[in-house]
Figure 1 (cartoon, helix red, strand yellow):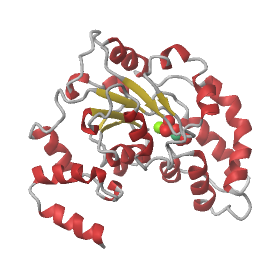
Figure 2: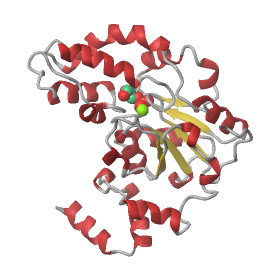
Figure 3: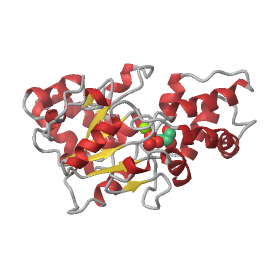
Length: 283
Ligand SMILES: O=P(O)(O)OC[C@@H](O)CO
Ligand SMILES: [Mg+2]
């Protein structure tokens, strides 16, 4: 009820204050994902010069589905398991699972598909582990991932990784990309003791921000790159800006909360956010 009342009061505020009030809530106990930023408000941030021109000083990258093409492995394994129950896996369920910590995503999977009486979340994780362990070492980079990481690192922009993946999966997925991921100032993983709750809780992004040199960093100086609705909401709940690079099969209704939507990291223009421009002329 209180959330509805606040949302109603917000809608009465002029756009400028609305944006401010949403960021003022960043330290509130409210889950900001209840306050989807309306398109006109997001546009307002760009139209009234409220976009963070020159104010982005640090970047946090999500990993699965954003830097690495790994979400397809989860989908494939989940389809195989569901087929045994004559059920199909679809993107509306995928949208609820992606980006979350393993056990949280597993609970969504068994409950939403109605198989929790035959397969517990824990047993689902055990069953999918064997299949994922053979797939993860073949993980490829998403288009534009290497170029953007190397560019920001070369320009001295502090960058780090914040992924729901646990350490054992992180190591399997990145084993062919060790040199690139070594450019990250630090890595926060899903099984980090400081990450009490997975995305959309802000925990992982707040922990990642804290580990940059010179912290605390104002979250409004931090740009997050994400592919998942849970990750986008986690970034907004942390008071940060977020660029979403969604899978084209994800329903566009999940695009509303992000500050910018891109088809690929190749489409990212650093100067949109006050970051150093690319030197190459990427086709
Ligand atoms: O946070 P990311 O890197 O997307 O990892 C999530 C992973 O658990 C798969 O959805
Ligand atoms: Mg992701």
